[in-house]
Amino acid sequence: MKLRCLIIDDEFLARQRLLKLLEPFDSILVIGECKNGQDALEKIKLKEPDLIFLDIQMPDMNGFTVYDKIQKKPYVIFTTAYDSYAIKAFKINAVDYLLKPFDEERLTIAIHRILDIKKTNKASKIEGQIKRLLLSLQEESSPFINQIVLSSKGRDTVINIDDVVYFKSDGNYVQLVTSEKSHLYRETMNMLYSQLDLSQFLRIHRSLILNKFYIRKCVYINNNVYKFELKNDLEVLSSRSFSSQISKYLSTQP
Image (cartoon, rainbow, N blue to C red; front, side, top):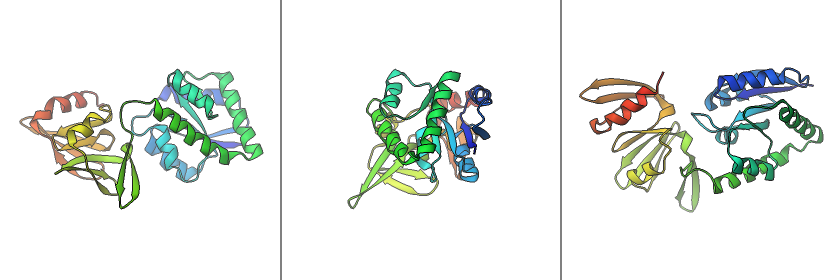
């Protein structure tokens, strides 16, 4: 029986390259492509693939966050342009990967490994290997935070940065607002801002930071003030003092 697979990558040319390389494999049936993490989560839930080729670096959420959110986990081959340290971490933790630009010989090895795992029923080991990989990468990873841990009454709640729609100042706290819930985090807005990846987050007011992925629309009002409409239907206004950052952000939008 063929392995039904999804290709998840924000780069069109990378998806096309992988599609071409997969054509000779009788054991693989490509059932779809996804260009971002949210699209991937929806299609994985709908189509329940046996295997996913999962890009680590995507604009809305990284591949590890996508994998963590999947309830019924398929086999996974990560695709990456990471540096040598990260590749070493993949090897040490026995998690399979393809390094961009994709290579036919390396793809063959990766697929044979997946088929062997399927044949010998070792899938349960893979999740543990991926968890160890994440710990290895976090030790040497970027200076930006990717999670916030909230402690209350002896219980920890982990919030993935990718899931935060916006941050809002609230006295001595910052509100972390996700699509499901609002949380209070004891931190200053300026300190939090210094820890965020500014390719993903946009400060539009001294009390408001938006996740760019959740911005649906931005409209100029007047006097260097902009109105932002978010994907949760909230509308917020910017401050004039942040107009230069907003103009720079708008210049990168299609």
